[in-house]
Amino acid sequence: MKEVFRTCCVCRKKQNKNDLNRISKQGEKVIIDNKKEFGGKATYVCKNENCITMLVNKKMLNKVYKCNFSNEVYKNISEELIDTKHK
Image (cartoon, rainbow, N blue to C red; front, side):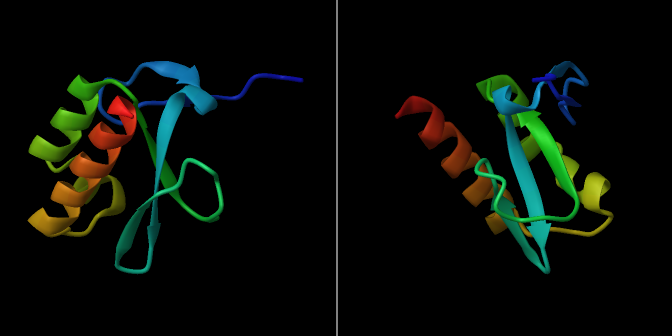
């Protein structure tokens, strides 16, 4: 089977899409969609803590989705992705 690559929205490094976190926007919600349950536009970010931290600190999802997400959304993303990594 052919490998599918995606680009991390933070470091711009291409990786196998299974090695990245998938972040999907559903209405006004942002969902960590690593199981690929939701269709539509999604962005990918590396699973390393540096990329996750930079995504949150620079509020990069605002650029990707052309809207303004609250600090609470970024806090939830940070907690979920970093906590998932450490489990």
